Length: 173
Image (cartoon, rainbow, N blue to C red; front, side, top):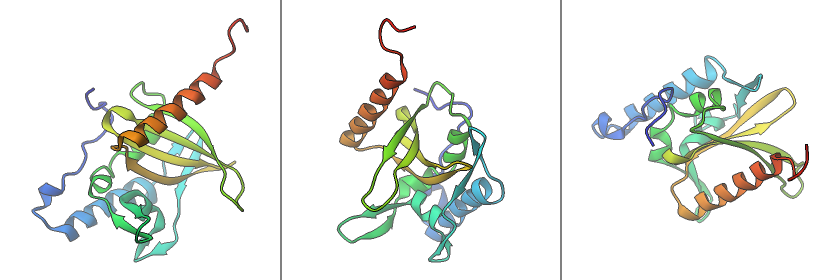
């Protein structure tokens, strides 16, 4: 599948001649433009992010550009996430586009209230945006590449089960 016309090109680290600081500054500028200077909305609710400052930048930025590494219990920069930083806002703003799969998923963690998440998956380009639903806003939880086969299968199963539950039973009117 080709890239949807409304989706900007991903950044390419190779275009920065190995200058990580310049690349990271550009990635952050895009985050600022898309989520700080103006706010997208999803189904009429403003999309916000975790604004706590960690290492000089908002936690929401790190959640979109880093991968959690269980072995070290630390976040590590993920080049592919960084390169796709131009994608989350347009995906949030085009949820009805046929190239996207959009569904809700209930999350329950011990000692935390149940949370409804909205997943917006651009399956053919291996990328998903995750929002947490709140009464008056949507929280940008993360965005990441779906390049691991078992993870893609899990997402497909979850999506397909959700879509199946949205249809009326056979024979119902």
